[in-house]
Image 1 (cartoon, helix red, strand yellow):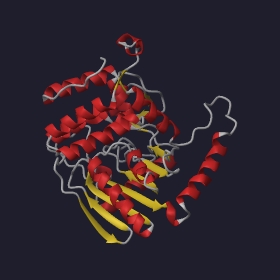
Image 2 (tube, rainbow, N blue to C red):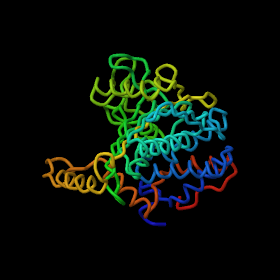
Image 3 (spheres, rainbow, N blue to C red):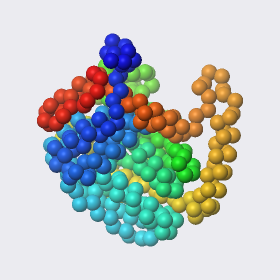
Image 4 (spheres, rainbow, N blue to C red):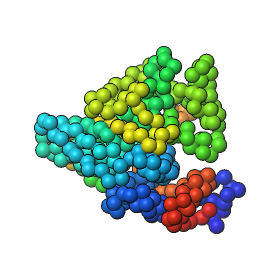
Length: 364
């Protein structure tokens, strides 16, 4: 065993992406998904891990299995698309896996934007779909600016000044294509200081949280013990501005699509049998409608180089463009493997035994 991954070193073992993909595919098949759909879900979940969105990749597999087994998610949906105007469409996910529903929405947005230059696609009756970055990346790699948001699959934030969990971490993702073969400029942020998936990772690994993530609903004091996260509220980014942004994104992704919002949101962390009616939206904008993509890529490269070459501010790690770290991580993890914390490995091995499928192969 490599010294870098010995259990007593504190560093997680790394596993090849293909091993993760096989386990997810097998689990999805046991849960009733057709082979093609199971493979698609697995590919996107592993892509989340490859790009550093560890709280949205294989980490979510036990939760997805629990909800599929509990009847909360339809393993064989008939996903439909209704195009109500040249640049507008509404996708009904038939309560299918969110990765499948959003793949359809992204493909629809690209096709429409190629036709008329811009497309807004709303989604209802979907489910948790992993990190927002997945779907804007799909658009950017096909020459589109992509903008995406979703009503988070559980509420962990209050409206500014309130004490009830009526808002989610409702993320915002934007991707801008940077040219053939180059990773896009990509921003993916939660509207809370930290995503709830990150809180769950701290709970799984029994690691305290820093102050400034959660506060008590009862008295507003800081909560740092992840075991007490149920007592708290996640704080928004930028104070009232983050709360307002989460609200507006939720109304556009949820209310506008006839999907759940506010008290209607089902907490998929605690519920194994209820349909969530998760809402999303995705916007595609064709760069070619403004200038030749090659010219745009060259202009963008010059401007980004100017930013990257700026003198670093003392006390910081220097300039980092949105998407840079994601691209570096993906290259490294594709080559070296995906980190697998011991606690998560144990959980996945238990899941594999319960489903009677082969466990993960690799260092323990």
